[in-house]
Image (cartoon, rainbow, N blue to C red):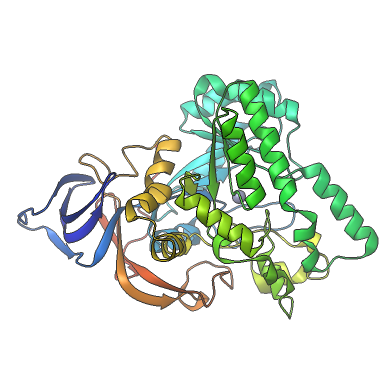
Length: 449
Ligand SMILES: [Zn+2]
C-alpha cells in the first residue's frame, strides 16, 4: 500500500488538498485525511500537484522509415517517458507485409518486457484494400482503439482511400486520426527547391507552409463529415490550422485535435542556426512563427485542443541528421520529447498562461484516456482507477538539458529552457517507480487492453 499525503490532488472538477491511498494496483481512497494503514509506504506531497499519470498519445519508439531507424527503442523511450511523468504511451504500429494483424503482433512482441510505462498502439493505415478493411475490426478486437492515416509522405492515402478507411472503421467506433499536410503540394515545392539547388535546412519549412496544413485539415474533416464520423487531427502546428478546425466545427463537423510542446516553445528561427544546428529541428509539420505559438497557446487556454502529444521520433544529431545537412530532404524528420512533454506543457500553460491545473490535467491525462478508450482505468484520480500517479513539485526551477535526459538521441530540442515544476515521483499501477527523479524499477509496463 502507498499513501500520498497532503498533496494538491488534481481531480476532474477541482483541486483537493488531501491524501490518496493505493492498495495493490488501484486507487482505493481519496480524502482530506486518511489514517495511515499499517505497513503502508508514506509519500509526502506537500507543495506538489498530484496528477493522474500523464498519457502521451503520440510516440514513435523503435520505428524504421525509408531514411533511418529511431534512436529510441521501447526500452529507452519508455524510460524517458516515465521519468517525465508519463505512465502510458500510445505508440504507432505499422502493418507488416500488408497485414494489420501481423503488424500489431510484431509491435506487441517488440514492446513486451521492454517497457517501463504502460502502452497501447495506434494502427497506421498505409494502403487501403479489402484485406485491410477486413482486418480493421480484428485489430480493434485485439485492443487497437485508433487508426492513423497520412495525407503526406509516400505512403499517404488518396481521398477515396481515406473515405473507404473511415467507412470500414465506422462500425468499430474507433478513432481516426490524420497527419494533415498536402503531400502532392509538398512534393511539388520540394522538386522546385531541388531544381534550384536550394537544399540547405532553412528550406525545409518553406516546402511545408501553414496553408498546406490547413488545406489538409479541411479535406480530412470533409471526408469525415461525408460519412458523419468524427475525425482527429494530430500535431496541429499553425494559426491557419486552428482557424480551419474552428471553421469545420462551425459547420457542425466533429473534429478533435492535438498539438505538441515543440510548437509552443520553439520557432522557425531554429532552422537558421549556425553550424547546421538547424537539422536538429527537422520535423513535420515544421516549427512555425511566434504568432503561431501565440495562437496555439490561446487556443489551448480556450479549450480548442483535446490533447498534447510529444510526437517523440528521435534521431541522433551527429550520426543521423548531420549526415544529410546539405540536403534537407534526406534528413530523418522528428525530435525526442517524451520526457519533456509534460513539464514543458505544464510550464507554458499553468505557469505562463495561468491555465488551471485541472484543465492542464485534462489535456495530458483525462482527454487522451477518454479518446483512446482507457477511461476511467486511466486518466483520473478516482476510486477503482489504476494507481498511476505523477507528482509534480511546483517549486523547483530547473534547466532542461541533454545531460539529465534519457533519450538515446544525442540532444534534446529543449536544451537550455528553464521551467518551474519538476516531476518528482511516479507511481505505475501501485509501484513506486520514480523517486526524486530517479528510476527505481524498470520494465513494469504492460500492454493496455
Ligand atoms: Zn508523429
